[in-house]
Length: 321
Image 1: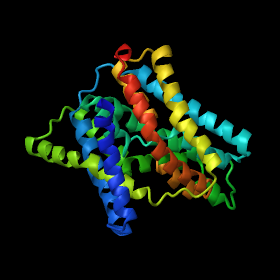
Image 2: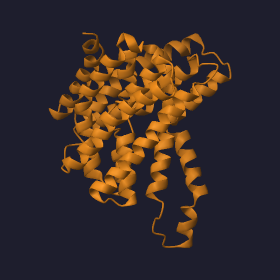
Image 3: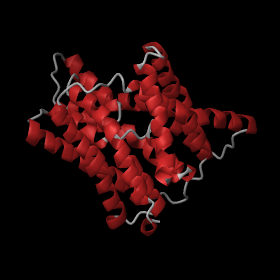
């Protein structure tokens, strides 16, 4: 009953968004507007408010952060190895296939589900991960995808130089509403600036709308990412994402690093999230594995209900508390 109460409101809101778009109660521009408001406004308000008011630990849990991204790297590499052995992908295709197994929907779905299962105290460990989630994975994916790009001119070569790439990543990090709001809120917090009462209450109200708005928008967006074929390849990606990644995360956090239980549970819940929609955006950018990415997003989103329910139950066992 606890798991149903925690997870199914999120599932039902996503289903409502899906039906609203599928039944044409909302047209495409209206659904896109909800997604845009959630991604560019409501979620950033939630993250800024959370980062600005959070009580960060005096000593950072480096084992937690290091363990999480060690799993990300191992899973990314495993996905690339599977893509090479099973499908003979080239390096650019492998960068996308590996990303699909390692990149979780940590923000739009991860925040509401993890908060529902673990409570508001999970926000701080989530913020620690989300701060560098996109930066690390997309920097790695871009480096792999552009490892040996075709260069037609010297100007192209200069534009693709490592310094230019890192500068571009840095600018994107600051301009991205997710990472930008987290950085701004963290700086506000570490500077010891308190939020005025009126602003605090305003952001709190906006933050409350972020969870239902983003989940509703995600449900509507899934009508855009249909099952298009290459199901076998997509299922390999889904198995890596929903089975290997959370299991490896739990094992490493408990058996190797002995991370504090509550932080461990947050990491495992995020690892159990489905393939992030940004993987499809990345595949579109390079024109590779688009069908596989779209199919994996839909399949993992559907199957993640079982994955998340299992981990919510498992992590709630007394022996893990």
